Length: 365
Ligand SMILES: Cc1ncc(COP(=O)(O)O)c(C=O)c1O
Ligand SMILES: [Zn+2]
Image 1 (cartoon, rainbow, N blue to C red):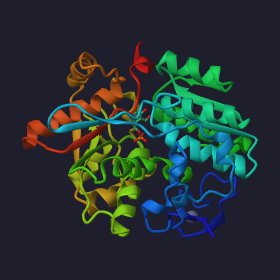
Image 2 (image 1 turned 90 degrees about the vertical axis):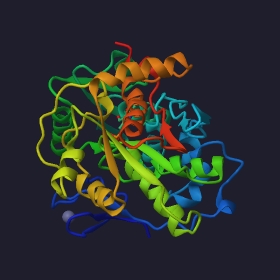
Image 3 (image 1 turned 45 degrees about the vertical axis):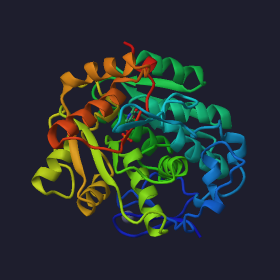
């Protein structure tokens, strides 16, 4: 049976628990081992991430009334070395729909009637939209300065949106206080392990589209929902014998907020306190990522390089993408800037894939 298990003390709880984390403070992990990845288990008649549901711990058929066709995003060539996976081709225009579709499906399956979530914007958009679709009341907390477009979308989906003065990390604290004091269900992309069961489909899709995994996979790293999902997916393909080695994974942070780069430099197993400077890459501006120890374990295990984006490179990268037809939000333009920086540091990186995971209109402010 699939259960939550505490990442600190090993305590177990049914996945229907309303507790956002273990009483000891540890975050939940899912004790779930999917069957070996096998192409025959993919439901090729289903045009959404739920075509991979044989590898997801779903309780029932609720997903059918929640899905909005998320996933199935194209991979397009950008130049001789670089491919873009167009993950902003999604119902709410960001990759977060992969995670939210599975998380909200889980919420509906276990009878959650109302939930709260904090976010720099995209995850909040996504949870608001899927909650609206699932008939779950939803409250989203965003930090001041979040894109007005994201706030408008959240409200349009029928969720309340509370703008919290101060930095992104403070906004999370305010939302968590609401969870603690009012007992609201925390439909959060960082805390709730179901979210990662959605983001891992990013890798399954790449494999299904290309029949292989590219040599270099670049993943943005804020709280690490795509990073962790991506690594779960890759490890699943590797343990199933579908790929014979892990690709070179490169993690992307911004120079103005790079707690993982600092931790790695110092050889730490959790992130140190850092100064967070303002950055256009709002999606990865996470000073205190809650799953840092788990992420750092993977960084050391696979010797993952962390590239930090110089702030001045973000807008030129965005313009370069846009001139070639791809209108990405600032954080996502940063993925391209990080790729260019990696090439500057190491020379050509053939067979590279980056994600275009947030749409440009979201950050026009
Ligand atoms: C466009 C975009 N890219 C990357 C990220 C980083 O995702 P994570 O914080 O899960 O690492 C986010 C998160 O909000 C985002 O919105
Ligand atoms: Zn515990």
